[in-house]
Each structure stands twice: as C-alpha cells, then as structure tokens.
View 1: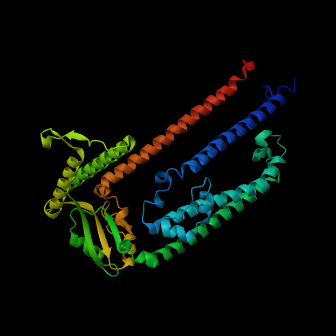
View 2 (view 1 turned 120 degrees about the vertical axis):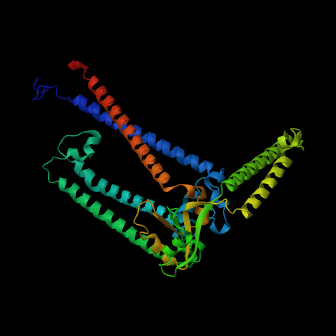
View 3 (view 1 turned 60 degrees about the vertical axis):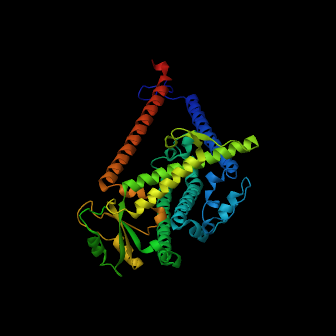
Length: 410
C-alpha cells in the first residue's frame, strides 16, 4: 500500500503508467515528424515537377525582363535547379537582382549556419549530459534539462554552452553588419549606381499644401551642390479616368483576339468574326474587333488632347520629387529633420526609380496612411489574441481529457 500511495495520500504513478506515457510521447513525436517530413517532401517534389512546366509562375525573370537582367539558365531537369542555385556567385546575384535581394538571401544563409552549428553543438554536448541525469525521466523527457538534478555540477555545461552560443551568435551578427556596411558603401559609390538617374533623386512625402514650389526648392538648396529641379506631383481626375478606360478597352480587345485565335485553332479552319451590338451603331450588329479598336483609338485621342490642355485640371498632391546635383546631397536630405512640426515633410526616400513607384499610392494623405497603419496593427493584434485564445482552449481540453482518464478516483 505504501508503494502505491505517495506521502500526500494520492495515488502514485506506477511503472506501467510511466511506460505508457513514454510510449505515447515517442509516438506523438514520431507521428509529427513523419507528417511534417511527408508534407515537406510533397511540396519539394511538387515544386520540382511544376517548375519547368509553368515558367510564367516559377521563372518569369528568365524571359519577361531585359536580357541584361535575366539569370543564368537552370535547365529543365527534375532537380537541376539545386546545383544551379548553389553555383550562382554573389556578384551575379547583386548584378541581376540588386543589393537588397542579395542581403536577404545572405541573412537566410547566416541564420541557417547559426542554427545548424548550435544544433550540432547541443546534440554533441548537452544531450549526453541530460541522458546521464539522475531524475529518472523517461522517453523524450530524458533528453531535456529536467532530467538533471538541480544540485548537480553538470548544469554548468548548459550555462557554458548558452554563453558560447550567445557570444558566437553576436559575433556572427556583428560580422554580417560589417559586411553590410562595406557592401552599402561599395554599392553607393559604384559607377553603375552613380550613373543611374535616380541616384540623386529623393521622394518627399507629406508636403504641406501651403508650401510653394519655390519654398520647397529653397529648403533643399542648402545641401551640397544644391537642387537641380523640383517636381511637385500633380494629378488629373479626368485624365486618370481616360487612362483607366483605355486600359479596360485594351484588355477586352486582347481577350477577344486570344479567344478567337483559340477557337480557330481548335476548329482547324477560319471562323466568322464575333459580332456585338453597340449603342453607337444604333444597336446594329458590328464587328467586335473593329468596335474595340475604334473605341481605343478615340480614347487615345482624348488622352492626347487632355494631356496638351491640362492647365487648370491638375490637382496638387502631397508628394514631390527633388533632383539634386550631387548624390551625397540626396542622402543627407534623407537623414535630416526637415520640419519640426508633425505630419510635415516626414518621409524622404532615396534612390527613387520611376519603375518602382506605385503612382496611385502617392495620392494617399498622411492621415490616411497612419490610419491604415493603425488598422493593420489592430488586425494583427486581434489575430494574435484570437489564436492565443484558441491555443489556450485546446490546451485546456487536452488537460481535461487527461484528467478524465483517471476515472478510478471518482
């Protein structure tokens, strides 16, 4: 009886219970490992099979951009992309994709190295210490620090490894920061960068409505070399509607032509051109292609006239492009507080390339941008709280299920 009940009067766990818990924990670990490994292998095989067949999705940069920026050929083999990706030199990545892409890939590589080294070090030094513990843990629990007596000197192994891990991780991070600073200075002073039109251009946001173009120019004139030109962004609602209508007509014409070509290919002979009824032709049947082409040409003429006679139609926006005569002036302006009042000249972006600018977003006011930021933060917080509550409920259910198994105490 004394071996069954512990000192508090509760039923002590038997050896069979320990064996069952050990087997259960091992089975849970093995099942999770097999499931995740199977999913990872399935995704890996699916990517390897679909990659050469859907270039538009997995390899658009191999044909849809300028030849000078296209990556090296990979091949259509099932696993040919793996050695090709490992052989790409760092300079080729910077040349084809830019410095940001290279630094992102380098950060992933650094994290992988740190994780791999620390995992191997823990497996080689800490796991044997935990297994040799005297606390009698079984199964996977024997690999944890809980199997080591709290008064044992072997706990210093955990402290030593932790200190070495922190020191080595900090050394790796500091080394990567030094590499980043060196690459940034090399990139900013490289002729390929300095010759770009956007090297000395900044995008200024939150420009107040009461600040004239001349006042904005005088504000940036104090930087080395002075200002070459100031472009305050403006927009025309009528011209914007015409451009949207032209894009819609162009997409419709492309869709109709593509569908007609597919039907002719399937039929094996020339088919009659599709007809439609338009209000302009008094709802009489007319050729779809001619109707779309005429509407597109008319829209282009209206856009040309609106672009020439745009005086009085343009509305001033809260952003401006400033072109300096020297590159260093652009970077100094980006690191300077231009106005002490809030929501005025708050953001200055360097190295602006017109291809990277989403011009529609320039119409967003500073208040709208901040409200969207707060809404995104609230949504993220709500999602985190929701998943935390779900996890807590599931954990409670698991504990209740474990307690329900002790029905012999009822």
